[in-house]
Length: 147
Image 1 (tube, helix red, strand yellow):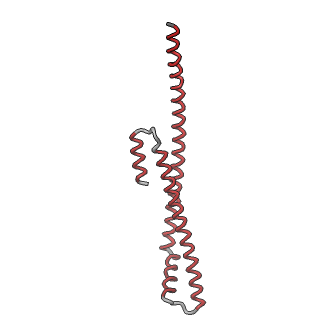
Image 2: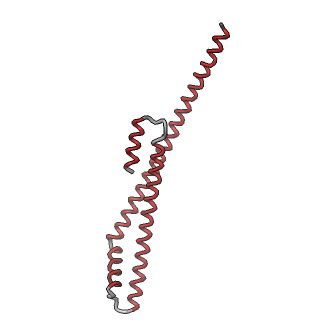
Image 3: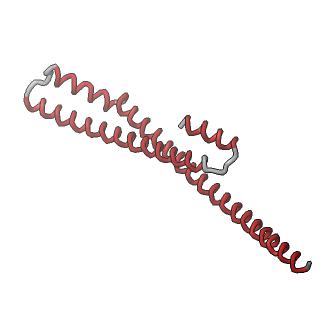
């Protein structure tokens, strides 16, 4: 009888021990995932802020003095309003410089747009990890749809 009880109790003790260690490991994993999620969220927020700044700078360029000057130069060159070849070359040079600046600003905006999409996708992956409850999954799905 003693042998039968000890043979039944030992596996139960092991089960309880593994259950507790598994629970502790699971809690540590949840903490690490929360830290990773927080870091990913911060990176996403930073990228989104940079994207908004890049959009704002590009819009200021296009609606500001330089954008208007670029339009005037393009129109003047198109309608041949320059007086001589020297003035035409100066206009073309200035137009080229302004176009290069505009392209740099657009590239910056596009690069940050890609970053926001990348971090948003990464954040969706982290939020929708298997094992999360149904409510969290639905909330995460809603967030991912609106990124």
